Image 1 (tube, chains in turn orange, blue):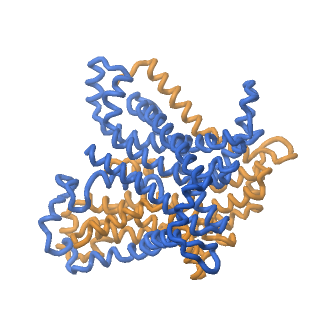
Image 2: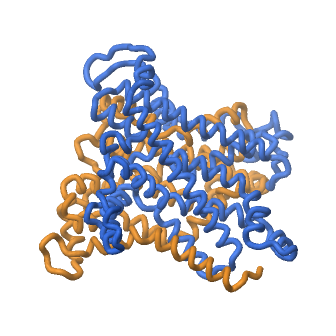
Image 3: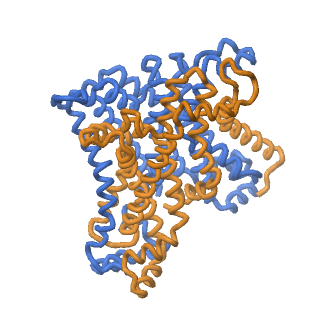
Length: 268
Length: 331
């Protein structure tokens, strides 16, 4: 398709302006993170990261985030694969109703469940544990994962399962040997999305860790902000530390990530 | 849940009516099987009648116990007056009745409506322009622009809040820029100024959401065959005629999805409000999700917080329902 020179120029101007708008806050926080602290010599201060890391206890909170994310991603993935497999390839009574019940989960906001979850888990003595942060997020991710993998498994040709049946495969073998290997891209996308949601989750992590133990990275940053509001260089360094793992992951997997989102939007 | 989940839910709702719905007819992958095999085994590799339920059970247990059941409990909590410790008093619908005359709750609803403009309407306009440009103009570096403009979506809102608090600070970059342009009278502590705080928080939402909206619309536009644009151009259509005649009508579905996602995001923008303004100054920037947290965990009014939570959930469900209806009418 041909587009006039003048229009092309306009297009680049508009795109560049919005790219700049998207990047400026990110660049601002990056440059602030290496700027001198109050009263320090001018120049680039990479030491801010070290100092923020130590004062903010980011080693511990990043590790907590990693543990919670590992629990949520692995559990959500396994449970969603099993449920998505049943919904996507099997006929059974009540499948529509059950599936709609799962769909409902996509709409339940964490704000609605977090109050009873806190008080009920507190009476079970489970607050301030990894499980208290992970289980509500597994539940949310399972609703989405089931939905996502049902669509994925439904799109596979019926002949695949029939061939597996001829080879004498049972339901578990057909799933693990045939359907799962053929669904690696969809599973990778799901993994990335669930990991991101878990890594960035704030409300559940905030409410479920009242004592400050098992604090995840966003909580660590929130706490750091409470103590170091005036020391903006250190605070920015902490912000970069918390954001960086997700940004790197996104830049590496962005093709996959964006393709997954486009497919997701197109599939239905 | 997040944006993408909602997008898919909304589209799913607008598309088919379940496994046996009309949406399956003629789809790829031999969907006719579902009616032909009624009464037979659940699938080619499954013999047992109960096998499907066994596969669903683990997921359902976790989902039921940590999502469905707490929702019911929240509804129950909302009928009581309770401080979080000791005895509770059954008060019926009093918590809901009190909300009607509660200035903080009213402010939260009004603020949420204002935020919808910044979170949904503005990003929709920006997203339409950007997606149309990317689709129509043969732009080099399309991947670059797409990635950069989408990037805010992957950054934790806590980090976003730290960055924008700094930008909005009394001596921060925004005010420095204004002063260097000689606009000293505009400079202010943006998040502390009762008149400016809400738009300031809202503008962060615009920054956040434009990339997501652009991506969704771009997905819709990429389905328009090139020939349609070619034909329009042969007929002498300019970029604007082309946009209103071809591009806009063909992404109506995506527009609806983008709106529902961003409206819901505006309603439950907890992290940003908690980290930037804590609802202040006064109640200038409070939102329903912040009221849920504030009432239940800071003011120790668990019943009242639960009532707000239930109202918020009802709002989210209602928005989804309306969108699903619109989607059905279109298809």
